[in-house]
Image (cartoon, rainbow, N blue to C red; front, side, top):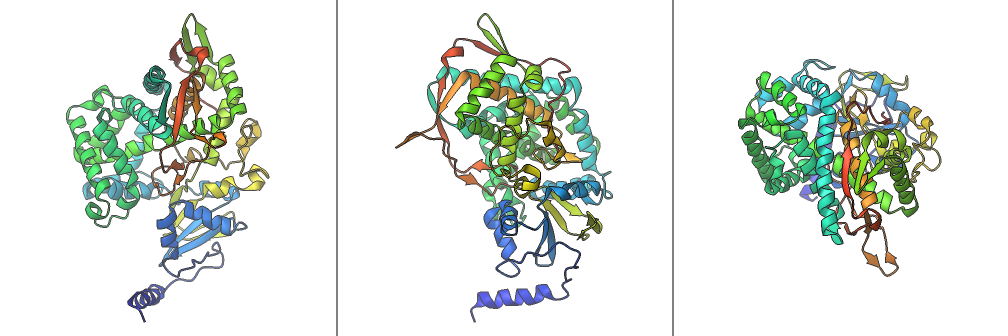
Length: 507
């Protein structure tokens, strides 16, 4: 018998010694084709999409169980169970994964981890103190100030593109550069480490290798490129803090620094945590922007409709100056906002994950046992015809145009309450302001095929653990041309104080 088979057989016998059988009240267990390690291999090969693969294989299961060795993971695949998870938020918590990220992704010290760790289910650890400080810094005039800075940054990139057009660009790479610089300047101020192209490249090497860093097995060897980039990024942030960079940054940057510093976390550990913060800031906004642009330009009729809506309701012309008003985008461009939601819905690969502190019965049906993990497959939730209609897998630009969509409770584009993205308003403001000016100023043409220009779906990258959206796995080249109607205008944005908030659907 080959050694490999012997090893797997022994592993199987050992792992099943004393194994707790599933309680009949637990969600049905989905078996892997390869015993013991099949689900682990599925995760390694497919990333978060693996749970969607399983939900497609068992479409009639609202929830199911997978086991790797003795460890159970429950997957929610139906919108009807999301509220049950929310009602038990103190017992089904996201908090432990913050420390997993701090330890394995950021490489924080044991001292910092102990300060950050949740003291009991429901909070009261250092992580909660940081989150509370962030929420306080993301409202009112300070939020408007940060939004204004972000939008001014992308305005510079749009102007630069206009001067170079016609030009061919990698659309995802261009979005990534523009939004990285604009967002990081707004966050960390003039001493922002992301001003360095070397730092930006190192950061994206770090982000691309997070799935290997999370394994925490000889990371300096197994994930060497990501590990080296993380360490050099940490040194850059240490230089930023030692130069008192937050004093010139946003209130959000100041709040994070002051809270962690006052808790006794070292400059090095704060710098490591800030590398993680940068992942949250950038890895969501960039692919979301790319997909909104792709979904608009690949649907010419809808593109023209939304151009006309923005032109009529949010664009102010004076002499040769064109200004996009953010308040008008929010209040008078419902088709744009609906399109934005639908693009996020169909481009999601997220699987919000929680740790189960105590035994819980969801919806009086499913026993979820303490010490297990629970995740929600957003792709399965979005495919649910009972909630989203018979065309749930199709792009419907009017789906969120009707107010009835808000009662679905299954849209998870900004997370799931009580762990909603604190920066969702800022991100939406920047994305829609940027997209609105972009579609008025530019035409895009994809590479030509034998049948002419074709907006073909790009090949996708499935292994990202940092972004809840699909990302292209290869360059996506387009030709950028200025539209004659507005090519001689100077472009600006207006962000009034106390502009209110977008009517975002949240789970």
